Length: 114
Image (cartoon, rainbow, N blue to C red; front, side, top):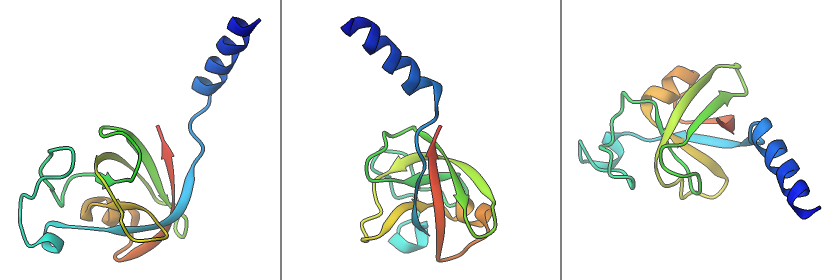
């Protein structure tokens, strides 16, 4: 019985995408750190033109769909860094990702792990 229940839970967990997280997103860039080419926590160089993001807990390399809840635009980013370290924020996006979502500064977004 335990094996069957575990199998059912595994199938259910993999059949549906992760529940979206929502909150405030910010953007960061090489200009924020005063060092062009700064390495992220994963070792990848920070690149303003890449579709990357920082998240506190998602594993490096994870793909996420981030949707701007104000205008409905979405973009798929790769987690390459840790953060944000400001209370109330759920994700930090590269300049390219923020631009694709149509915001500069802060935006209310949903984040869905793919």
